[in-house]
Image 1 (tube, rainbow, N blue to C red):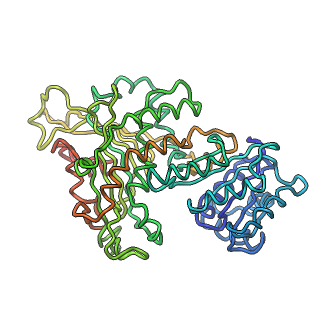
Image 2: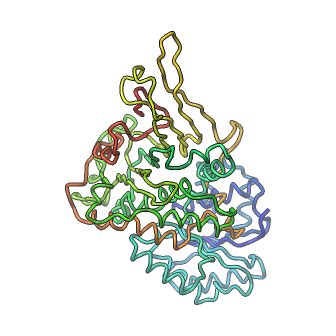
Length: 498
């Protein structure tokens, strides 16, 4: 059971709050994981008062919470909520907020401010909170939670950090990356550091290359105006996939304390070989989805989406080859790939091991020799799969691939949403799975040369049909023609993946 606190949610009528934050808090309440005195104070402009806001929340919960809406639990959840109507840019809102939080001790003194807002609003809201002394810690702790993007490039990230630290200490800022709250992502750390089995193999001596992939069949929906300012590289690789890379590649921290974990992650980010601006085309590929068919449904190309320029060169697909220059990983390529309107939803880490020094069974293969793989499924299938070569039945000495599969959870176990665990970490003050500014800055340093090279239209933007696995040009990132992108958990014949 956590200590009581007050969650102040700015933007409580927006999609993030309605689809993620409020359902997560409801689930925590249902599981008895919130202190009975914990309160939720919501702010928004869409609804005039608490009753109207709660009616909207209740209607939305009917289709989003696990197991359907339970009236008794919702009644308990509603009892811990309150609402303040107001515009973020109106100074009166913060005076009213301060007055509300001071009402007869109804709200716990420890305050967490969640910015479910556009990043352009962060600095202004924090400045106003400081003006009315709501960031003053004389009566309890103060924590501010912000969502990505943490800037749009290195310079904007530096500017944002400077504005935040005018009012907050670094340890008060919780930069949330929901990817790190996923059970499977956290299981990577347990798998690596709680099992001695893999450690002798987890290095350049046995591993050929590592792929980190996030594919989704969805397009950009109504996010056209926002996505035009970011693109796949900034939206996914700079944040989620580079964070996954640190979990896969880092050395064992001296403890699981936040400072120790962040130190090892930062070492990896600093060890990634810089990309010269004139070499971008050798290590990076960008693409944009065209019209096609996804799950049997015809869909538009990116340039036909709402609020997207008809001649847009924003990438919806990005692939990047990185090298980590340290003793463990020297010479091992890390290939990161993400795309929208892909054939299916798939997020995974695929580790390809080197071929044996001698091939005794060459005659049994039609094409390239099949490698051993360790594949960690993140979503939608949360599992770990080890692929090995075995003898096929029969007199002939023929071989085939087989997989050893293990789920990360038992059939009767429920997987919590990533936000549920991260919200509890905020209350506890545990910053282990939140990003430090130094990590953010270093991640931008890695991708900034690519962003600069892609800032202008060019022939290096490759169209790919919706419902495919992206542009074929991404294959050139492999040094060996026998290497291939791992699209799914399941392999297919001849060493090629589906």
